[in-house]
Amino acid sequence: MEEKLHVVTGAFGYSGRWIAHQLLEKGVKVRTLTNAVGRDDPFDGKVEVHSLDFDNKEALVESLRGAEVLYNTYWVRYNHPQKNFEHDIAVINSKKLFEAAAEAGVKRIIHFSVAHPEKAPDWTYFRGKVAVEKFLNESDYSFAILRPTVLFGGGRNVLINNIAWMLRKFPVFGVFGMGNYPIQPVHVKDVARVAIEQGEKRENVTIDVTGPETFRYKEYIGLMAKSMGLRRLILPMPSRIGWLFGKLLGLYLQDLVITMAEIRGLKRGLMSSDETPLGHYKFSEWIAEHGHTFGKRYQNDLKERKYRSPKKNKN
Image (tube, rainbow, N blue to C red; front, side):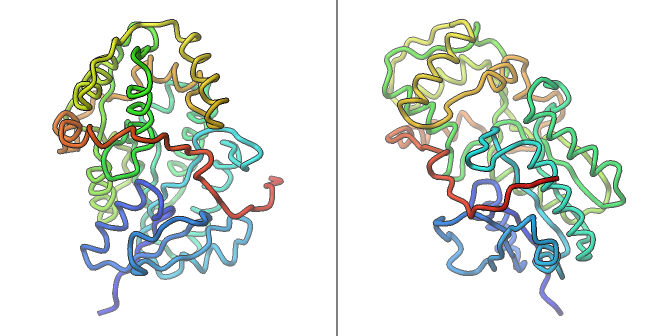
């Protein structure tokens, strides 16, 4: 019997890495499409590597040829023209990827979106997610759109690590507004499991992927501090003051720490869902076990993300 082939974009990254791990455990042949350079290979050569070149349609189609399922984790967090990170470009590239998958005969697309993208129309990140979801919904493809909230676990926890770093560095931690908005973290392994389960189905669905616990944001930060063995004063602050502090810290660190749009999304409760939780891992148990290991050094996401330089998209 011919070995099944599944393709994962960004298997050397975060969520894609755990999808690839779980597929390998199931005996599935895995290929990754990536434009990252200098990343470690956590699979000891077991994952076939192809370049993710959106401007070379022929190569893109061939890189997907023979695959049953495509797991698309590709996106960009922010607009950063010097790095060729732009949400409008990400929308165009996602469409190219899906069209190439259809031409290559891929039977199922699992696409990673974000919770409540329609509730933040003033942020290009969310507008882009809505545009890609709309494209899939109007297509003839078999797809599942997964909308995770905020991820934890699995090693590369940039968000949690950097919050922990700030908790270690500063005696006071400011939360935006009163900090009473909800956050519902989900373990990356739960997200990977749900993605693979959906890869075995053919019904077109859009589902939120959340963990079993919901916290108020200030409780979430307090739980982190306690699990790290720290006593910290957690204070409410105006959102603009928090953003300005993040801006100054970002200049020092040469990174983008927080955007005002991210703050607005957090305060609107977009990091939680009313749907039945699909995750099993509890954040409270996980952080109690692992909290002491986080925040020893700042993870500069902007500096660490090194990519081959694609041609600027003219479309």
